[in-house]
Length: 221
Image 1: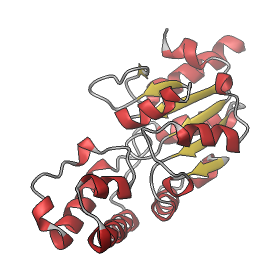
Image 2: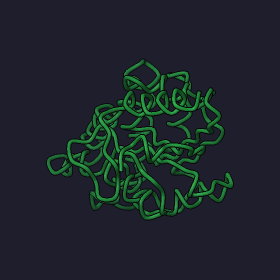
Image 3: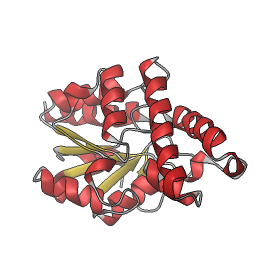
Image 4: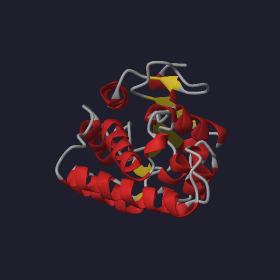
């Protein structure tokens, strides 16, 4: 089924943040590498951020085989570095992000943010990119017991905001995020991916989704 056919009439939109609306992967990777080099240099050679995209910072650190005080210090250091990078403007919006969110807010739809990022980091990105006003609710990695690809975050989002899964669309980028949304039974569009993830409908970019919404409005008029 085409993306346009999938989204027609659906009023609740659950959007990921990192890698979906903002081009933050290079900055997350830089913050991780700097923190690892400082606190656990022996783990740096095997670290590949793209293998962890969509996971929480704690889950990435746990995947390095680190524990105890070193792991906790590494989590805090990475988050501090990332937030510093955000505040100096190193995390840009993807093309089409503001257009898509604007279409949602003016077209009788409701947008929510569902992200594995920590609350402190997410709040800084929303402020730096002037995105906060677009979302009726924000669920972060701090609000759930297990991050993506566990479907719990999307299930919790639907319960928290009384979203009917049959009226919802998810916009994701990473395999972890797609797996979480699909396992929660949600129609999922995947952007910015070289290879499609199982269960999602791949779209070129955010502008393509906005184009679908524009066509829906045109047909209804």
